Length: 297
Image (cartoon, rainbow, N blue to C red; front, side, top):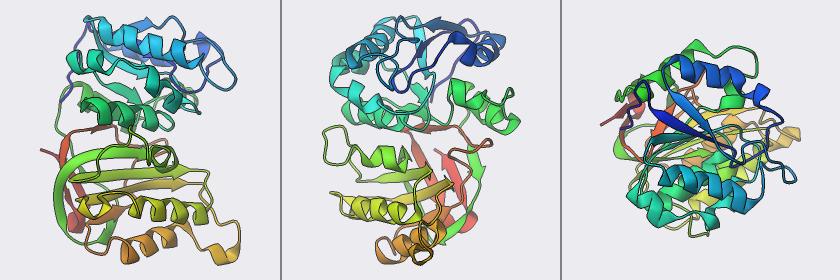
């Protein structure tokens, strides 16, 4: 498990969407400094290239630089948006394997985090983003508590959500934003599903599209070997037509027809919501569906 201490240096990168200025992340930087951490701003953090925070090679260069710098203990992403998957071909995976450190991110950074994990087995941290978490002017105490538990190396034990399919399981946690995770399907950056517990959420997708993406997930290699599923919150994922059904119904349909023997919980406090858990990916966890319990082991 990761453990960050006062005086540790952390890299700040924009591997996905662009940010307009340092003002957008200044409150987050001040918060991290208040913990004694020393943020180091990447060379290309404020670049813009279409909807992204710089060209693919430049965004990758910031990440490779931070992996090479042995004083940097973790990498924090400034924002989600779109484009982090385009960075994956330009990362130095031998470097990352020799100098493993987690990337903290949310949303579109799911592609980056799971792609890096697939290539290196280096754990990542999902559920915190500099711009997103401070956009309202204040940081959720709920999320802050969970984030600082991760910083301290605490093995969290979380009771949240409700059971969809009964059972218990152990496995390595992977996933994040469903639509972004789905973009890795069929690529060499897709993690092996065997023995994994999937963590999935989304935002702004139509309910039928959630069903389509889950069907595609069920048709992936080794889906029948996954250990469990944790559905987070699906924010603003409404039906486009009445006959589409709700997202809740899409999850229930998936659980019943594609994963009837897999332990599943839903409504877990994770996703594009103010109060969410910050969770290490690539670490071993235990899921107890009847208790809606997730614990790191």
